[in-house]
Length: 262
View 1 (cartoon, rainbow, N blue to C red):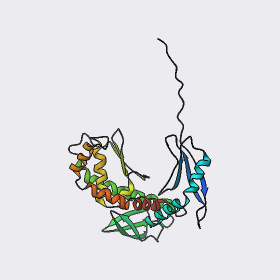
View 2: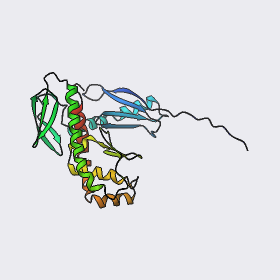
View 3: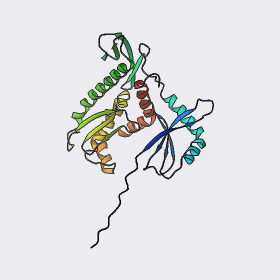
View 4: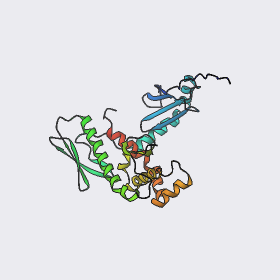
């Protein structure tokens, strides 16, 4: 018997930088360029974070830039679409008059106070803020408020859906997610997009049910969808809601939590 030694090639990591492109009648645009070992082809995409050019390892930088130039018109149209889909601006002290929450724009009232806090009173939101509180503090308090509201909603739904599941989620995390609405890790940790609390509560509830069903089937097989159907019969309507409103929800949350200078 002979043994053959294999040389293991270390996995290449994702490399990121930026490239500038000039769009018609607009200032130069910074596009994130990503060289990804998993990529199969050159790809240009736009999401709430901006424009992204993805290159496989075999593609040259020149080929990537050529691809970017060839798709400048498409890029401009996509960026314009994101601007129209996300009319919300960053949170501005004393200026922002409403906050999106559970599918509605809630009136926002500003007050000076000793401690920075947000509180619901009826259908309105009240922001108490010390005069010298920084914008970073203001945005942190807003994020904590949204997280508390989301956890309250999830806590109200879980008792209805946990019976019949093999176990409960081991952990719940609320994140700002770029494309997904939720995920379930092998250890049972449940992650949900914080933007869900801005939209229709039924759509939020569907995502929770969807991820809980992955505790039974870690795939999207017909058996998985039967579990979803049994627990949430109107799930198809909520998927349609995300197709129509998903961009606006994700972009709206990012704008509210981003500094005004960005």
